[in-house]
Image (cartoon, rainbow, N blue to C red; front, side, top):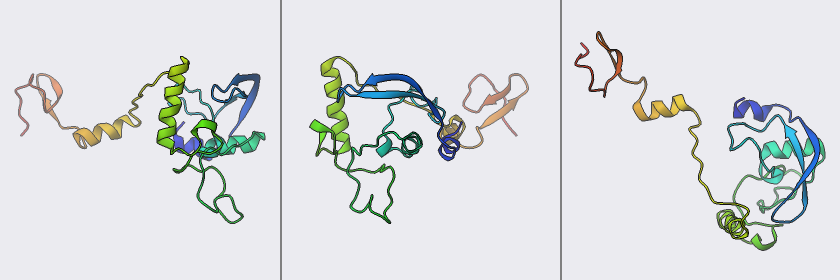
Length: 167
């Protein structure tokens, strides 16, 4: 399912009856199976942060789960007539114990450092080619330049194994 499709559907899920422990707070977190989590995102398993993700916000609202803000939204965000809902912008960390007062980037770095120091996590970088066709066209242009070689068939222009020249 595409991200746009997942965003527009009602968020459905089922509580597994199990919980995991949040390594930062030591508190239990209920485990749900949900249909809105995108399989192409990491391992397909996530820790929802409803106050910072609109899909997670909708799911938490539908299942009566607690929503704790961990980034301070701008003044008036939660007021009547304000935006309300998940705040996905930048800001200062709140309700995050030893990360309070830090900007998001610094807090992420400190949290990863802590996970590594505790031996329960490690820093990694994942690369995803989100839309192969569009990304390929950005690199080569559209359409991909080819020649129709009588000996080798369709051959990319940069190939050196065909002596045929287009008309």
